[in-house]
Length: 426
Ligand SMILES: Cc1cc2nc3c(=O)[nH]c(=O)nc-3n(C[C@H](O)[C@H](O)[C@H](O)COP(=O)(O)OP(=O)(O)OC[C@H]3O[C@@H](n4cnc5c(N)ncnc54)[C@H](O)[C@@H]3O)c2cc1C
Picture 1: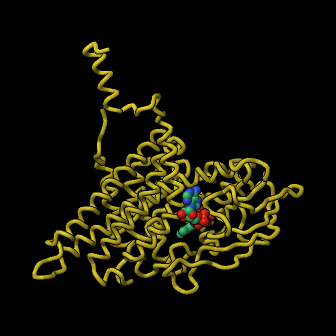
Picture 2 (picture 1 turned 30 degrees about the vertical axis):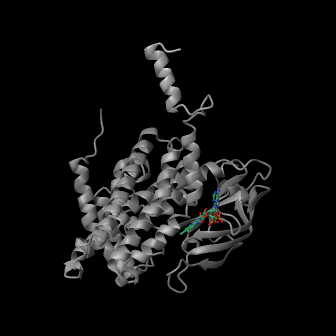
Picture 3 (picture 1 turned 90 degrees about the horizontal axis):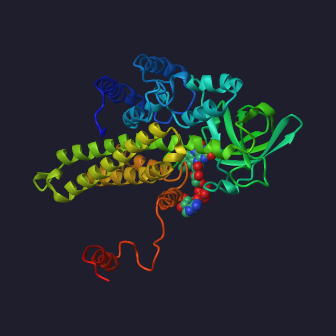
């Protein structure tokens, strides 16, 4: 019997250190450079940030999503979840702790599928946090359904030549290399028709047409690229994994990414709840603090319930990933937390806005940015609806249709059966 919700004291000490470090030091980067998280560092930033990263390494908390063979700590998913809750409170924290998406997911698939040469060229600098990478999958005309993708890679002698367009290739403008998903076997089914390529960003033929900005980003700071690939020639060894295997490679990447986002969102939603509680205790109306108003208490209680339920599901999912070591076996739970991630963050942040009144909708508080983040999380890594369908399909696998006319729980039918069994009724 082992249902234990406690954290061992050694690791709790590390979490306490991380919380203090993030809240007092790393959060200052959020205030000074809110839009620079994905960019190559300026010299004055490097002078501050490199020592912070060193401190994280000294504490044994660098790149905790990776095993020791890749320079991580190999703490496993539950410890990772607890740490990610802390990192979710700061925009910069994942970068300072070597767990920045999309680089984490990109590193994960290179580690998983890359050749030794690919690992030496791309993985090592990525893990060091020295370079930024880009995952180029979504297309201008198709996102949620990879069966609609048309970007092509065709053989030409020893090389592959890529042609097509991609949209929302985040951070392409700063990336050292792009991981491009392209159709190589058009006749095959969706699971086998595409391949993944590692493409250096300076390869001729890559044209960043524009960088879409999220609402609220400053002018010129957009980072979600529309890219045209025109006769982009890469050698045969640019293939990541086997030809036709991109679907499986992408699933490996997205599985981990969705879980990491959920773990961090627990921390972010908790942060919004903490701010709501502080405001409720501070702001006065009709001679009392807001916290005395029942309606405000409902906002607080609903938020607490949502965050706690979400947190338990995330932790349970982390436990299952650790136990089965196979994202496929945890598909239902990963899809479930993917559905909950934007909903919980949105709902709690929205209540926090309301409790803060007019101040809540300004850019002097972080809530509107949290709501926008929630909406992005409802799309990135697959829209909510797609994951709801996955939850439903997966759970239906564990059920069977009723054999007769009536449901198996039909009370009169069961009562008749009980009469026959216990009373000898005909
Ligand atoms: C902040 C952010 C960062 C991103 N970064 C990247 C990146 O780095 N690389 C990359 O390749 N992509 C990236 N994306 C794109 C992301 O993967 C896509 O937005 C996502 O796959 C959905 O595709 P779409 O936006 O084209 O929506 P569409 O496919 O056009 O879907 C639109 C809507 O239709 C509905 N819908 C679609 N399919 C179904 C279905 N099967 N069942 C029911 N309803 C459905 C849903 O309401 C859905 O939201 C990013 C997106 C965001 C918001």
